[in-house]
Image 1 (tube, rainbow, N blue to C red):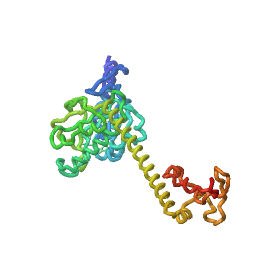
Image 2 (image 1 turned 180 degrees about the vertical axis):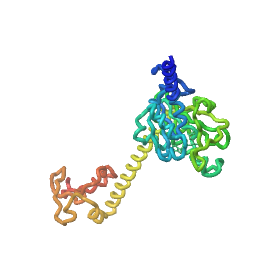
Image 3 (image 1 turned 30 degrees about the vertical axis):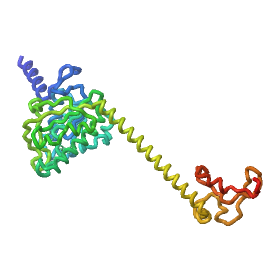
Image 4 (image 1 turned 120 degrees about the vertical axis):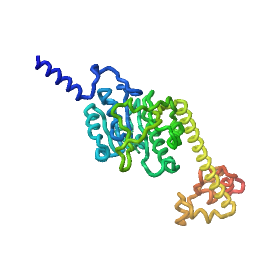
Length: 338
Ligand SMILES: C[S@@+](CC[C@H](N)C(=O)[O-])C[C@H]1O[C@@H](n2cnc3c(N)ncnc32)[C@H](O)[C@@H]1O
């Protein structure tokens, strides 16, 4: 009897020491907006406690790719719980990446070909470089979020979403996430309160400076859920194509104008009797011009007699004969009747 109790106790202890795993492996587990069936990418993680919280609840992290800007060494040095969180994630099958710049996701060789149901950046922040209300710093934060939106918007599955958790109070609301998102064809689906208690074990971190491992006051904050607006995307693609067409057309016109200017210049030089001066300097396929050999003669098309004026034996720009008839004017047969 006592050995039976011991066995039960050992089993219970093992259960407790393991992250809770759903008994039915196929059963979908939901934690707020996140399902164990979602392919998820997390960027800008601090001590990896958010990913770890989700993975523990899912009982698996095979659907999670969690990343930090910091290297592994930096992460474990900065956050005292990072090492154990990373160990749990690894054991549960997560893909863990370090040195991932959220503004360059589309360039990352391990990420750029994958598609996700959720791409998450909780409390993006470009670092403590002065007062948060400083326009320069706001611009720096906006650049970070904007770069993230740009890359992440290309990594979503059809019904995929980008989530950013962010404070609502000024000056943070001046970042204007919705405007930044719209520029990347993303629209807000929902703005929902971010409650720390929904993610047991999650600890929001300052992430920078000497107090990087400390939490910051969350206060009033939301998770902003965005998705790609197909209409906006198509509209943008169309206007981009129209712009490209227009600039191609403009370039072609410029080339044409340049060409006809050149031809006009040549023809007026011919008119001014300056051909002799121009031609020897110009690149020509008629070597006799430079060697002073007598030019090969051509037949007049009408009377088959010689000799056609020298000038017409020079290679002309393709369309020169169309300009003012100047080219034709120089073809002069010796025969008066011709
Ligand atoms: C306020 S902390 C939040 C950390 C964590 N997401 C959390 O909720 O506790 C801001 C985080 O943004 C990260 N970060 C800043 N610039 C980044 C970038 N270009 N790419 C990825 N992460 C960045 C920092 O490393 C830091 O971990």
